[in-house]
Length: 262
Length: 360
Ligand SMILES: Cc1ncc(C[n+]2csc(CCOP(=O)(O)OP(=O)(O)O)c2C)c(N)n1
Ligand code: SF4
Ligand SMILES: [Mg+2]
Image 1 (cartoon, rainbow over the protein chains, first blue to last red):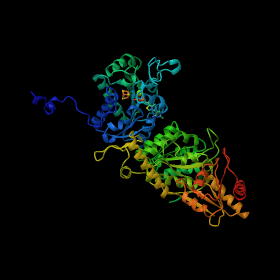
Image 2 (tube, protein in one colour):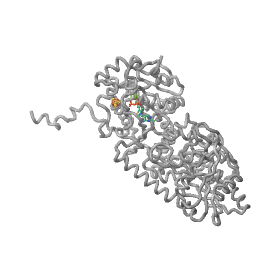
Image 3 (cartoon, rainbow over the protein chains, first blue to last red):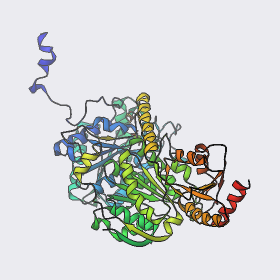
Image 4 (cartoon, protein in one colour):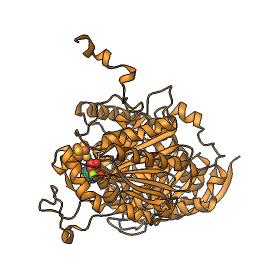
């Protein structure tokens, strides 16, 4: 009995149901337990590994909780100034068109300070992949209101709830950029259940494969939780996300092969 | 083969960039330097050398395109004029922090604010003292002719790569707009992929099995490591200050007085020297070519031989502070300049010398 519960007896090939992603480094993730960022990192790295494009992939980390993404992804990466990743990705892809280039940004980064760069990279139809992690809040700086914060939602800078009259409406940037002729594939996904993780992974794979087609920009929004910023336990935050975020930010493809999904 | 052309200073920058093996230009229009982007768009350098040109959505985008391109080991550049350069400061600071070798051209106009589109030298502090946040310097070259506008493109790229540091060409609206003869070098090829891997092994070119991944960042949250990084940067700046000072001396051998001036002001001072010498005043010109690193030692030596120095700048007096710091304190040192986009006449400069230095 004693013998059987030793680690080596458990770690047998037939018992293994899950392995560490090859292209994730050994560095311990800096994210709060329960946060979606780590899962999204992992599936991007799975896609890069499965496509066999590690040596051809260049990533861009944002300013936000994912600022240290380059510590966790075993690929060449650049760290951006707050909001400027799409401009950087533009230059990288134009200077090295044979590479796969992706940016990884939060909602404050992509839809507030970097709105101009986002819209113009999309409008030019840069042949890149943009990953957009929408958690409706500024996670890194301690839970301030984001452009995507829901009406009535509390944050440290909307302590009485977002008042749309004085604070503006949440920005559906994904629907907005889907209108631009430069975007080829636009989708909104989530990673709170295994089924959603699989769907998101498929979408990210497609977004990378699209770079080969040179038809334009692929944009994958992932609606994700920020349990710390929302001041909830991880499971509760995912439930809250399903109930409150998804009605406002419905999941699914928005634009496929350059055509808006009806 | 060398080629002789008659062109504007701004156009000379563009043609020189193509010939210097530049990989990419990213810029946003602003007077008085829009000819740089216009010339490049007309010239189609992609067909000549493979160099790409992109009109960006803003100077914020431009400088971050330069950041990313430089991080890939490419020779990349942007240009703008004063308000646009102010917008770029965050990106330039990131480049200094991440030690990236890009080229920025500032064809200066008068400020503050939207100011004027006329030439000025009022961005000296911004250019030489760091400009953005944090302790850093960028190598700053000050051309005073269309020929130097062309020559300094290659020089700036080479210095930028030698030190892994941004370089700036600090010009002004007068030199950008004036036409002169300019001789161009033959085309230098762009870096090959192999050269990039060999010469800039830190560049993000895609992680291959034979090396660790390359990361370009200016972030280090650990204060002890961040201090070490800063100490390393400062050591680099001391090396630049020791090895890269460039200047020109005109009629200084017998001079009792000197003008210290760069760019357009140096051109005015050359005329002023003639006028003054006709009057029997022995005056010369000391022209810093590198504004950072500033020729401190040379100014100090010169200050031991003359009775006074007049720093002539199209500003309220910025470089004069560096002259004062460098020179011996027992001589007369003053500033003379015009603001708001006005270029002083040689006669005004001589008059200022007589009143502020000789008579004063
Ligand atoms: C120019 C600039 N302004 C402000 C900041 C401070 N700042 C850092 S992260 C951040 C918000 C990030 O929020 P988001 O993009 O939503 O990412 P998250 O942390 O939620 O993943 C802000 C405002 C900064 N680093 N730089
Ligand atoms: S603050 Fe929010 S977004 Fe940031 S790591 Fe924690 S849970 Fe994730
Ligand atoms: Mg966020």
